[in-house]
Amino acid sequence: TPGKEKISAQVNVRGVHDLRVGWRAALAASANSKVVVFGSKSTTTTPGVPNSAVKAFLAGDMDKGVSHTTRISQAGPPFTYAASKIAV
Image (cartoon, rainbow, N blue to C red; front, side):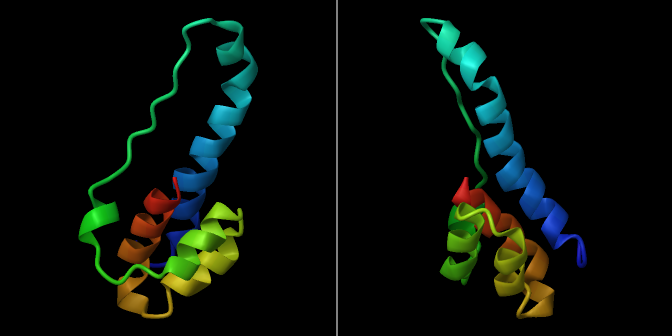
């Protein structure tokens, strides 16, 4: 949704990261724990996703990442979604 790109990025990137970090101690206590993160086909089917946005999301800078994905306003939502999933 246009205007909601930052929320999308936060859920997709920070949500996965924060849950993984939060559960780390409990998972480490189990000898057989595993973590699986599902991605999205958008990582391979959305052309033109700015690599600079992916790098910003990986660095934890949601604002910078969104500024890169929304340079073309109509592409903002799909670019943000794809870049955030690539970062994960």
